[in-house]
Image (tube, rainbow, N blue to C red; front, side, top):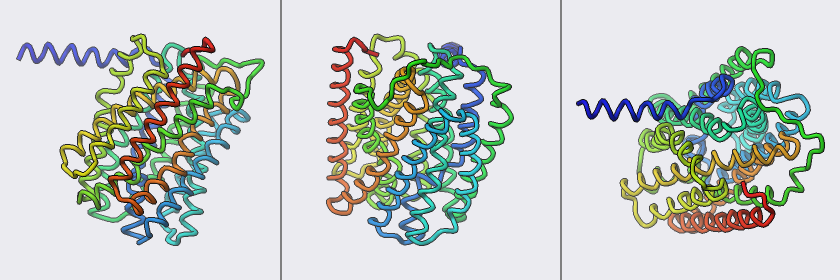
Length: 410
């Protein structure tokens, strides 16, 4: 018992220490993000809702998910522009409040045209939040704490996401899909109210808001453009987690919605336990951000190989664990890479392009995944995703070489 208490105390103390030094504003931003994400249980079940409840074909679902991605692109671009014009605070409040109302309204749409339009408008408004939030995070973080601040935000996202799918699956089982839209909408509006009360510019302390007198356009930053292309590919591979994988779990493996929710909740639980200590440990090593992203993308790609020719639950769980550790590494360090690079120019523009990279992944990733499953089956789709992932690895290695030659290794 004494050994257990000793280990528990030391491990717990070390875990708590990984959170030290982060600003009060970053903690508030994380809490607001947690409130917002706690209700985002519609997204993982969207493909199931469209196919089982509304009886859309896989081809229809693929195009609806593309509308999802197009709205995300428009929202990220508009959010970056508006952030540079009127500031991150106003953009975040507007996005949260209006997207809450739009989420509630989505449940009343039931035709292909209205759902495509509704999804596009919803994502345009909702994803205005992302570049604004990244710029806010940059402003409220000390330079030495950027990566851990990003990790804390991701921790909040995944803490909400770990509970969301499990609760969402239970709501679907006991009630209907309509309740999910109500919860999504209400939590968005609660997050907006919290933001108004705790992160008002008169209350929040800006720690790092560097203004470049001669800003360079992100569109002329060759290293950043190579990085963005690699992130698009990573996004296409990883985002199958939100669309084709739940569909595979249901039809390829035979899991119930509740079991799917529990499996996806494992992702959030692992991130909650391991990501912050892992990031702090990696930060104190000599690895570059790009090198770590290479390793994370290799893990993400390899996770799909465990799904081949086998529907054993053990292998599916192992696949989920591997993809989770892959995203734990890629997302925080890619975000930190973007934040550091953004100091060369307008921060809103840089962070908008970073968000747009994943929005482009939404446009092509879900569509590609569903069409490939429809034409060639699950196994060939997983082989395709693993192959795409290795192309992304090649691009990141090329980026690392390019930056080393330019004496700009990050």
